[in-house]
Length: 564
Image 1 (cartoon, rainbow, N blue to C red):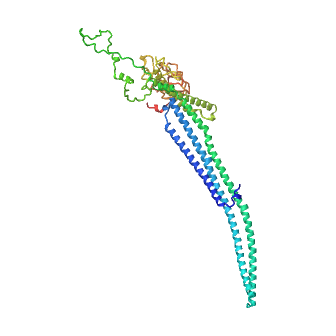
Image 2: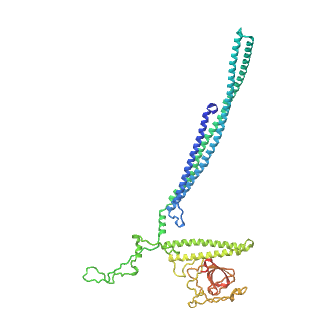
Image 3: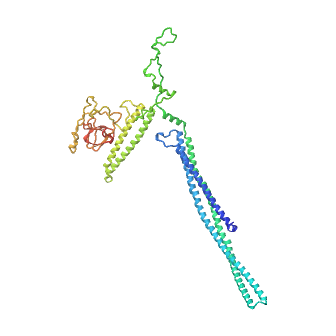
């Protein structure tokens, strides 16, 4: 069935129907728009919900309980789920709503064009009908006038009293009217034939073609609606696998909850390392009371089974506070956080120290890697001078070495505190040294002049002064006065802090005890400045320490160490 043949006379109804079709398409587009707005709002609310229950945390506040980890995993999966709802809204807006609105505009312009063609064809047919109708009316008028002329002529012709001129005039008038009627008849016949031809074309060619175009347009509109219905469902279907993975992730997170692991974390987090308090001794205050033989009370013989009050075990207020487990916990002021974490219980202090050592070790490894990279670059520059100046890298290498030494000192200091907590500190010689520091400087063994000795009677003897190398272009190290005797026992627990670094201008054999062997261009760390005796205490990268002549080195002090 085609609209052109079956609905040839329903132009107005087809006009209304095609307008209704476009209105329905736009109504569906509005439905899709509201649907995607719901998706956008839903996704936004989900993301806000996730953000609300998963706030930003510091590293120390990271959850460790499996129940917390699972909950945050569920929040992450929910955040991904919200992202899929946003994908649904985006694809609906682009593939469905946007496509419908563009198609609606095309339909409107196409419908307007077809209807304009139909109206033009109808107007042309109406114009042909008017021409035919006018010629018909004219033919009718001319025939009536001719009939009147015929009657007038017959009346005068039969009237014996009429003059010949009157009869001739009536005859001439009849002839004119009859001729005019014949011409009107021919014109009417021509207009009628033309109108019939145009009318046939209108209802058999023009209108069927226009209505067929409208029918094709309406059918394409229907097909487009079906496609958008399917796309509407496909948008949902495409995200179903990812949403299923999100839900599976939530189920996996739920299965990861381990009550035993959480209980162990509670023990690990709050275990103090203290031993439970022991029994308090009985304190008998009745020893000084005199008793008579007539007393019926059971008396305790002197010096038998009587525990005298021991001031060491007297119940003090601090001891009573340890019984808070069985009563109300005493209020304790907030203790300041100390560098060695001595304000914490032993077990918690051990964990904090171990964590700090691990962190410092990572930083030290970074510095070591940087030093190795700089040394390799320096070797490349030395082999290929056109690539760069090797001396330009020396300040950075020296700075890196200073940082390494500082980190090693910090690691050793924290390892000492850790050993103290673990109960591994026995004697000074048995204490575990740092992995990178082999020798440490003593405390309390320094003489006023800066010299070190094993003999207390010689503690105030300063090393002799060495000659100034500026007096000669190349000094003879043998002419330099070497220190007679230094303390070679650098076994203190904590190394001295690095004050700066120096570069050897000349070689020094360091044959005497307490001195340090160095070669020209060696870079050393300064751990003690020259106190006026011509000697500076330095440390090599290997950790070996000793004194070198101050005039043999070029010194660069740290900014924060000057004037201290």
